[in-house]
Image (tube, rainbow, N blue to C red; front, side, top):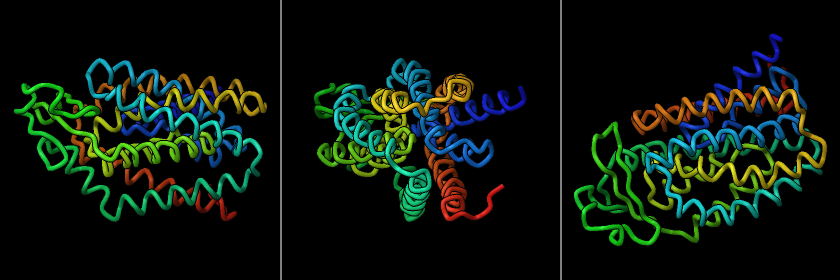
Length: 292
């Protein structure tokens, strides 16, 4: 009973971060399941993949209704992401447990280093600024959607108390990043937000909050593509997956509600801290060091 409650609590925490940051929750869930509950890596990834569907479902309700999610852009990028997820899932199903741990650790180290080298500053600035060379001034909203470009969008930021309007650039780069994100999502069960959110913000000029919301909209479809593979290979543990997914749904519902009211810079700082902590833990585990 205590274990079930702890699994439920882990899901709630993962859902909070996943919804607020567009991560899917896997960066918290998988290390906790493997380090604390000693769940095999393949089983942890399978539970994470299913829970990502819950994260996306809960968060998308809020983000789409609040117009934070760029649905047109998300559906376009999802084509490449889904293909990547299927390939990643097939690779993971036939990869050794230790190799998956090592790949997960290296991926987190690289992402954390990229963020700390300046991604945090750039993402925070773009998330708070409604008018930069990448977008339009909020006052131009009345000019009409055509001025935002084919993939651009707008939303109201409660924290800034004004409308944020933006254009989308470098769509081909975004599609390439989405394919890679889908591959890692299927391979490691992380939802792909660790790649999609920085890619949309740093490469495509999408404000951080809109990028996180759009990522949450996308990750559910991505997860479904690889979930069938993990289920077919027998890696889905019904008890673990059920409690984690329920917790994630609750956490994601709460996280999607308060995230739009927070400072984008604060969200990015939390994003970076989470990456560093998880990178250290998973690196130690991958190298065979004792982690308690």
